[in-house]
Image 1 (cartoon, rainbow, N blue to C red):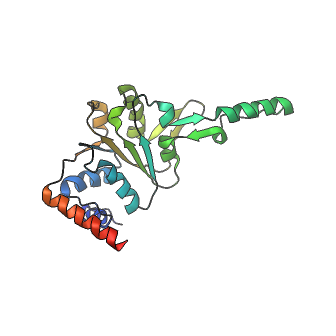
Image 2: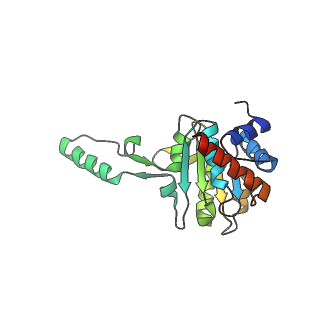
Image 3: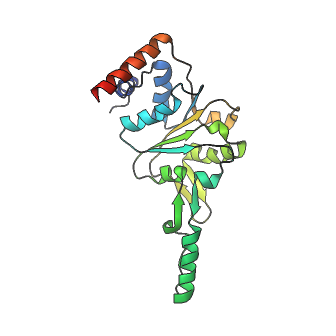
Length: 210
């Protein structure tokens, strides 16, 4: 699909997402500039659905990081499989063989690293970013600016394909200026009565056809 505002609007409509220029233009700019799209608005206005629709339009994987209070870098990026590392250390002592226990064989990818390591372009949904703290936001700066992360045992890991990044916020807390500067901003309000009726009709039509 040639990426234009009209083509994007039509593709979203085919997937059942009715969007005007106020939604499609920021989304188009985000895709064109390869910058994250920060979507704010009340719960239930369709923020998360945009990421799901994007994955369908471009026929790619949707990788979701559900944010929560206390989420840290390890849960979002990667963890080492300590049990497997310990087992291989013990085996190495028995056989006299030295093994590199910090290779990809022992790495448990979490959503952000998975999106960066993906061979195909993916949609990375960072859902409800407002539930995390400022420290976690600071960690995301490197990812959202340069699409790379630092793994101490490996060095810098750069994205094989820059993912389409969607961040959502319900407005539980004010996000930092650094986060806003690195993103295209989109606010979604509740739909008008006419638009809501149109959405319901289209949904019902799709259910009947399916």
